[in-house]
Length: 261
Length: 261
Image 1 (cartoon, chains in turn blue, cyan):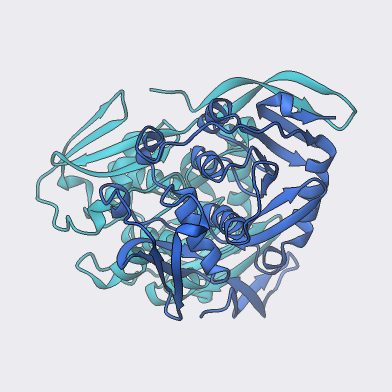
Image 2 (image 1 turned 45 degrees about the horizontal axis):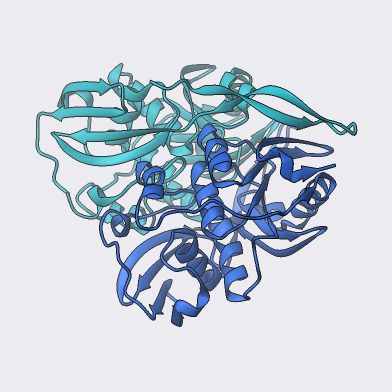
């Protein structure tokens, strides 16, 4: 497998009149192709680590499976092929299976409308309350922990948090991939999610909210902005959307009553 | 058409012990579906402005057309349908046409391999030299100009630059969309590109380099990081990749001889 970053000889200008040759760490792109029951499902352009978590998380967050018990076998090949065998057939081989998803994205119009299809997303039933100070503290931890970001400046990060601590932490060039890795890890390790929060460095678009809903995570905390659709879906699916979590500040966009001082 | 942003009632914590209700600007998501000669090609989740530029730029940067003379008609409907009629049939209705691309992304493995197919990307033949100080100055202009970013914090921006000035400037929730809008605008306005540079706020992934190559732009300047594949493609396609353009500093990753002090 490729490494998550490589060394390159670059020319650096540091503002002092001279261009100097130096060696820098550059983040890598790696294509992971998922096969489910022998059928090609999707190619994710990603950071080449935690690929089993990525694959399983993708199947959960895209509604293919509900839990890890449906997975019979999991085989990762060096060339970037992840073969997953399920104890069931997968239904939709229509629009969905004909997509390719790249390093930081999802599925466009389909994504917005899939909510109404067979893989329907349910509103989250969770009495969880979240301490505002835990959101601020965990964002600080997330930022400090991002090694690959500090090396390359080219990745997003995400984690699953429980009160004051981050249970799982993942990095990826793809904003969506970080979420899938977190969800995959929770599912593989059979961690309950309805009482946890998802924390991430990247923007909260509608698809991130759908992924969280499919994984039964009632709170999403981001350093960045949400979109209008993400906020509307948050209200609809009973998910608290928290954005611009920076320093001692944050904004709560939906299900505000869940956040306590 | 939807507006690029909407007002939402949010709860804000500003670090001083109280959560306060306030009104905030939130960036919108809008699905634009492209039909070419009556056939559905792709749905782009985007910021709802400059949609004709986006559509034409997409066709150029994805190799469907080589210039605007191939476009017979262009009809944008309120619901987000862009009908484009060409003076030719489009060839590949295989893998390519079966993709959906979302708010900040491309096409995964396919993208990496399409270089070898009929829509082959050619190395750029340009003697253009770029002044390092122009890169720094234009990045400052790009940052100051991003109105929607200043309002919502949720968009990328990109522009086409000629020496000391930015000719075209676009914003979008999708990193790729900003590039397509710039390219579309250049093509529609019949501006030569082989002597210009592309400037953007987002990361430089391999697909951004392929888009630039298809639009014959020899220099890409970003505020953010490049990936390894982007740097390799830069060398291969004779495109200068400049990253981390911040304040008085920048890094040159490929075709370094083009950048002069």
